[in-house]
Length: 39
Image (tube, rainbow, N blue to C red; front, side, top):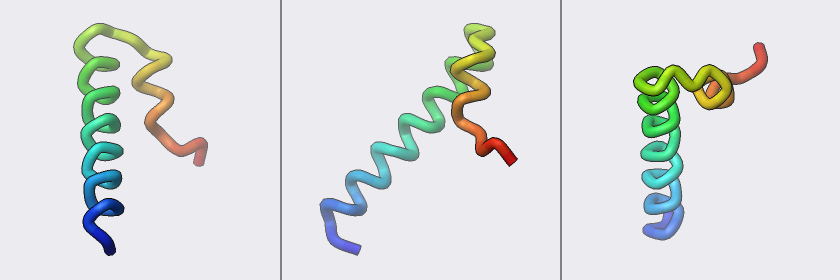
């Protein structure tokens, strides 16, 4: 994995965690549900 790919992955994970936390904390059900796979 290149350095750029690692940075991109880290930002993607940070966004995922942020959406999870904000969805729970602010009771934003759509935001929370958007992070999960359909199955």
